[in-house]
Length: 178
Image 1 (tube, one colour):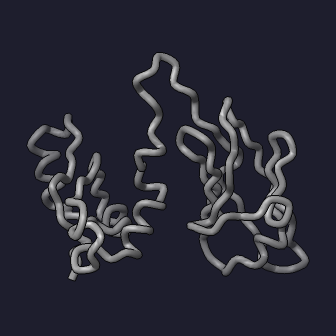
Image 2: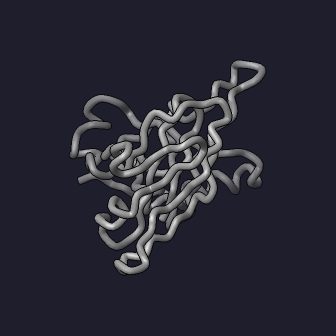
């Protein structure tokens, strides 16, 4: 049975050993902690480096849903989201305003939601909610720098918190929370 523990006591022991002046990493581990445990226990591991192959992909060591949730969360930065630090002038990330959007499920109060997109030289390639891609013109429109999330798309989402990732060709992808 996978152990999704954030091993918080070890994390804080290591932080204390350096007087809080060094970042600490979880290396050579067989299981990956859940994002829930990492965030609730405030275990800010610099990175974790699980064994690959059977240890990473077998449900005896890691639940597939835990891996998916962790790697798609905003808490974890994956390799494709890191800037190229080897160049003198790395391309800046795209940004959005606002990053948080509230949508009223009460039918008379529903409306499209407009977000300003600042691409900073990057190209928007897709929008996705989890692993589901949104459909241009049906779920959203992009006119210049204005991204409009259609009320018809938002209305079909279940009540609760949702994240929509704006996938750009490079840099860290901004996320609309709501």
